[in-house]
Image (cartoon, one colour):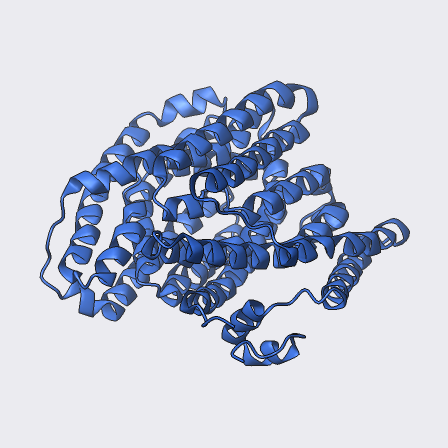
Length: 506
């Protein structure tokens, strides 16, 4: 067998760290939404979703996409031992986004009343006034995240993003809701959680990356930074708008309670991103540092696609079949109205994340930032047009169809582009075994949904039936490879022993 690819070990090791963090973050994310849906009405929760959507959209203009240059250029400078230039990229990006984000925050605060009139929600003005302070905070937050990605020390990102921020936000929000603060409690919890996370994250990064930060700074030419970042800035604008366009369209055509119900369904369906989000931060730098070795890039892409599909597929089956039960159990029965939203988005996200994700991490790593922008523009355009056409007729299901259509479209485009440009594709016999195992797993789950009447019982039994059948099918078809064993060894030596495959180093 060929020598082991150390990139696979790095992908697994760092991916396992981010996976644990994503699970913790996801648990607190679901917990805080469960808290909100029980202490405030769907209309108040929907108003908060609309306000934070405006903030997240505006902050993309504020940072100009520059934080994305950090995890592209810094790994290259570090690989070439040019530490001063690596530090220069971080310093230049940080200084720039602080200025631009402060300007955008002031502009948003001044125009908050216009947003309230647009969505016919007077309380939106107060919410945006309080939340505008988070725009420069989010810019620094993103700089810290991409700085962690660039040095492949994602355990520090986990501390800031997945532990400190959700724990502090949950605690503050819960305390304020219990004493009756409502919308103000949601806003203060959001702001305090972000502030504490940035403070601790900056302190940890300074301490752990002191060897880099103590080097003499060597500023780099802004040309390459801008050339790479501007298309991705536009990409980020469109991508974030795509992620929130459903809320804007729903808020314009329907009521804020529809926004709240749709948000819960979208959150559950997009939970499939957890595996992709665990591997993507380290996948892009791994591709960027070896982008000239197409054979190695393809090998790493195929391994990542198999692992994402292999772990995400059974989750998609469980969520699609049991959407109504999970919505009723996790939130309240009134949110079960979003069951079709969950099923549609689960299938769309499964397809999209398997082949590079909605942000095009593979294309970004290969340096095709303009193509990523074009894809994201297509993603937004398809989503927006479909949502505007369907929401007035179908309600929240129309928004879900718009998002699902866009995700399928861009996933297919990405597959075509990477094959056309570099001859890369993920389709192998081993990949087919992963996908094929989903058929008996889905068949096993159908009787659970149709014959069990209790939502709680369905929620408990369905994962056992689906995942158990899925694993049995993988074993029966001899789907595990030596690369899987290498990945498993980094996750857990015990897991490696359980895999039905021989030692990968023989």
